[in-house]
Image (cartoon, rainbow, N blue to C red; front, side, top):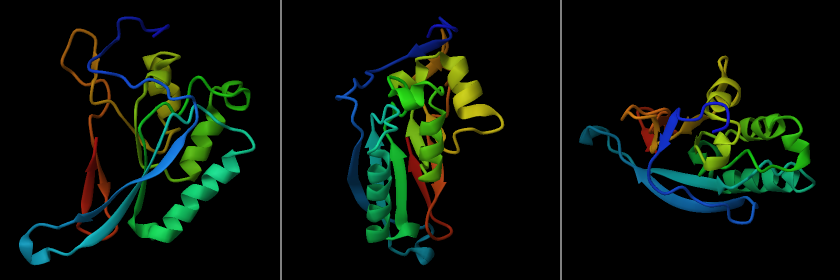
Length: 178
């Protein structure tokens, strides 16, 4: 991390870029069961996952967004959760990188991204940039960035949330993601 060297300790294996093209996949269709058993009801959920978007703001962005919306419509808007495995920003095309990836953050916000793992490229400008500008206070990225293997340097203190509990399509259902 250029501006805050020594501030983070990343444990485990980080993914490597897979050619810089975002992948969209239907990764899981599941059932959530509420507790207690008296409230048990099947709730179909569809998880759409993207990875390695890398600020691909270009002529294909509308097609990408359309694909997300088509998948949501097919599975049911209220039963679909959009997630990212990270590397949403960084190593980006000029249209996004020239504006510090704000166009990418805006597109992901508009698509209703619920949560994202922090990838190595989220840290290209340093941990402080991620927390102060990208995540922001007030919020810039309207989704949760998760870092289950990112700790404050020399500690076992998580630098980011390790997981998130997302509201399910019907109360009292919640979905945990990490």
